[in-house]
Length: 267
Image (cartoon, rainbow, N blue to C red; front, top):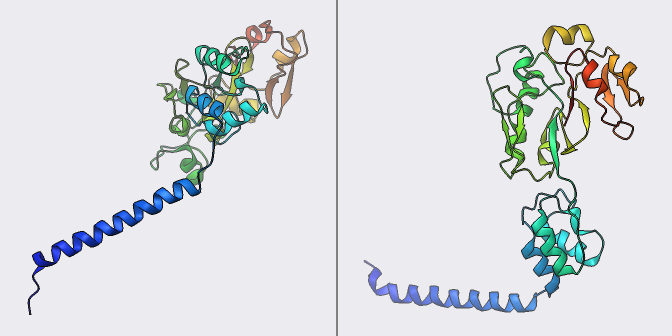
């Protein structure tokens, strides 16, 4: 017994068409039955916001942040991705004056990279976390940047790359200061800082000074010279590395000049 498939084709088309119409009707009903009214002001604010959904504001996305801004829970400058022009437009929409905060960018608290010796040649998954799981870290300094680019992949703005020296390089013209790279770094050698002013010890090592001198050209050796010469008493040694109290620091630059390892920089 043979079946004439062509004869069945109209029935198949009719059945599929009926199913399609039924599903369309259900979708129309669902869209009306479960419709949630939105605040037009929130919708207008969402249109002005960058839509990056980076989470730097502390909310899951721009839509959630917009709701809290309109509700008065937070001020519009909670968004780190908005530029001065966008803030001006948001101010006009909300009827308020908004002053854009000073830009912030991630900095790398490590000058190792190619300036630090390797313990071995790493051959494996091209991620910092994988390298740590395999054998700690390929660098002789277990605290420093590994340089395999987890921070690069975490950035949604193409604002970071691994430079020739093996360390993260920030492209400020793209960076929004969202901190995604900071949160992703397994070594915690990235931190967010203001664009101008702060003085930082760009080293994260807690190894003894003698060992640091052997493996890294610029690592802090915990000699304390910066601490002794700081006129504001803004520097202390924490686990063999100098740490600057940004509240006390006046950016005089004394510590930069006396550091024998060039481990302190002014942004």
